[in-house]
Length: 109
View: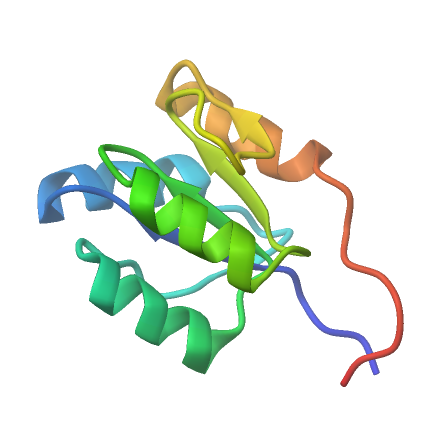
């Protein structure tokens, strides 16, 4: 069974989330619904099971929690945070960073 890579975007507000989703969209992966709060992001992680979290804004607590609870999830942020896999200095770098991250491997559970 082959599963598409899933990406979840999290930003501080709806306008920032829309811009981040536009920057992250690609035919190579599925874009999960986005979130603007930690609670919504965690609920989407539990229901959607994304492989990559892209968090722009002040989400250090979310990044730390996700890194601890889901050590295999790759995390792209807009600032250097503990647990981040990659740091994007602009929205223009998001798609390239997601594309170059290692793909999930192993059996599907």
